[in-house]
Amino acid sequence: MFTLHELRRSASLATKVFIQRDYSDGTICQFQTKFPPELDSRIERQLFEETVKTLNGFYAEAEKIGGSSYLEGCLACATAYFIFLCMETHYEKVLKKISRYIQEQNEKIFAPRGLLLTDPVERGMRVVSFWAVLCEGTGLTTSGVPGEAARKWGLP
Amino acid sequence: MSVMVVRKKVTRKWEKLPGRNTFCCDGRVMMARQKGIFYLTLFLILGTCTLFFAFECRYLAVQLSPAIPVFAAMLFLFSMATLLRTSFSDPGVIPRALPDEAAFIEMEIEATNGAVPQGQRPPPRIKNFQINNQIVKLKYCYTCKIFRPPRASHCSICDNCVERFDHHCPWVGNCVGKRNYRYFYLFILSLSLLTIYVFAFNIVYVALKSLKIGFLETLKETPGTYPPLAVFLICFFTLWSVVGLTGFHTFLVALNQTTNEDIKGSWTGKNRVQNPYSHGNIVKNCCEVLCGPLPPSVLDRRGILPLEESGSRPPSTQETSSSLLPQSPVSVPDLRLTVTFPFPPIPPVPSLGYH
Image (cartoon, rainbow over all chains, first blue to last red; front, side):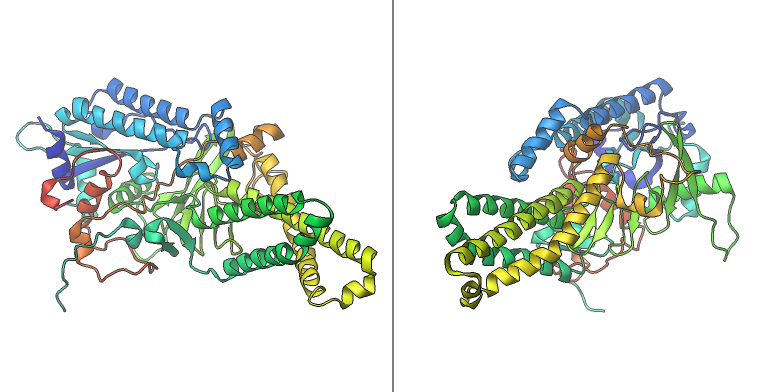
C-alpha cells in the first residue's frame, strides 16, 4: 500500500503512461478512453474509463458555449476586460474543481494501487499521465516494454 | 569553476522557460523579443490622440458638444486597454514536452513506423484524425517534441507552438493565438472606429474654423495648422491599413478561420477538406470566437522552482535568454514534483526546503 506522500517522493522511479488527447470532436479538450495495456495489472478497465470520462465531462463543462459564457464574454468586453482583475473566469473555476477531483481520486483510489494521476494542466492539457511506481516484492510489476524503453532513453 | 551561493530569492518558472519571449513584472507580462514596432504603435496612437485632445477637442467641445471628446476618450481608453491586453498576455503557448513524455511519444512513433537508421533524417511524422467527418492531419513538432493539436502552429519568431495560431503581429509585439485573438480583434476594431472618429472631427474642426475666419486664415494660424495636419496624415494612412485589416478579420471570424489557415489555403480549393470548425452560421461563429470561454494560460509563469534549481544558476534578469530545458535528466524529476504543486493544494515535501 502506498500513501500519496510516498508516491510523490518516489515519482522519479515511476513508469509513466501518457493518455493523449482525442480530437475527434474538434479542438475541445477530451482525452482518449482507450485502455492502455501497461495499466492492465494495476487498475480495472472500467475504473480507468470512468475516471477519464469524468475528466472529459469536466472539460466539456469548462468549454461549454452557451448563455452563461456569452454573458461572461460580453460583460468582460464591456468593462474592457478589467473585470478579470477581480473575478475568476468560469474555466478557471472548473479547473480548480478538476484539481480537487484528481487529488481525491489519487488519495482514495489510485495511491492504494501504487498509481499517481497527474493533472493535465501541468502538461499543457496535452496528456493525462498515470505514474506507476515500481514496487519490489509485492509480485506486481509494470509491463516490460515501457521499462526497457525508459532505460534506453536514459530515464531513471 | 566558481562556487555559486544558494540565494534566498525564489526563482520563478518564467526564468527557465524555453522559447524567445521577454517577460516583465516578474512573469506577469509576456511579449516577443522585438518590441520596436510595438513602441511605434504606442507612439502613433498616444501622439495622435494627444494632439487631438489638446488642440481640437477644446474648440469642438465648446462649439458643438462636450460629448465629442468624452466619446473619443472612451474609444481611446478601450483601444489602449485591448492593445495592452493583446501584447502582454500569453497567446496560448503550448509548453514543450518534458523528456519522459517525449520519450513515450518517440516509442509510439517507432512502434508505428519502425526505427530510423543512424544519420538519416526521420520522415515527417503525421497522425491522422477524423474531426466532424473530415480527416485532419496532426504534425509532429521537432522543437517542442509534441504532436501539435489541430489549428496549432509553431511560431518561428517566438519559437513556441501556439494554439489556434493566427499570426505573429509585430505591431502588438506578440503572437496572436487562441487566448488573445478576441483582444486583438477588439483592438483593431476600436482603433478603426477611433481613427474614423478622429479623422472626421479633424475635418469638422478645420471646416468650422474656416467658416468663421476663412480657410486661408485657418491655415496661417500657428501652431494651429500643424496638429490638425499631423492628425490628418496619420489618420489617413491608418484608415487604409487598419480598417482593411478589421474587414479581413471580420471575414475570418465569420467563417471561424485563422489568418494562418487562410494564407495556407487549408480549407479552400477543390480537393481540400471543408473547415470542420465552422458552425456554418455566421452569428454562432462570431459568438464562439469573440464571446466563447477563455482558457487560462497553462504556462504557469509565476510558479516557484525548487531551491536546488535556483541555486545553481546565475542571477536572472527580467529579460530571459533563450534558456533551454534542464540538460540533466537527473534534475527533471524534482521539477516534475514541484510542477504538481501549484494546482493541487498538497503541502510541499519538507525535504525540498519549501517555504
